[in-house]
Image 1 (cartoon, rainbow, N blue to C red):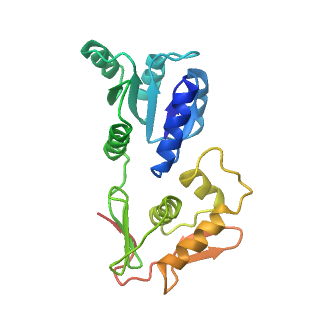
Image 2 (cartoon, one colour):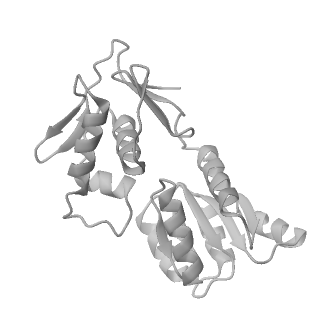
Length: 227
């Protein structure tokens, strides 16, 4: 997701809190930076401050609404009157939250928007005896609950969604971490190692040198399914 907020202190607090919730978050501090990032990467949700320098939030909202692969927009602003909400929603915003707000409410609204996005995927992923529910943040293998860290959960979800394809280290850094992740770090290797240990036997994550990682679906139910 992308947070667009010109008040740097607020933006940085939001980004840190949302990352703690397991979200891959980029940030832009003005409208021009936001427009550039929207052109480069596909986002599920954009938290958009309305009064932005460079390009106004209203203009950005209209630009996002016109895209074929449009993100869901949560307009975040100090202007919270009914008239302000109506005008914001009429620009193409999908939700509107006035400042000040409670952070848990923001998280719930973001997750609700991600579920409503037309290209949003199914809730529960299954393969190799693994069941992962991204909304409830639960994982089991052969009925055994797994206690995964935020990044372990994100890596497993990405691998399940990618089946039967491989994901490279760069793919995982982009999907599970964020724009500031060091491409030369060994954090993906370390996270995969911890995840393998927690998943247990028989091993289901394979590594192909120079290609990446993939889950082998060892279950008797055929390919990975999503319901």
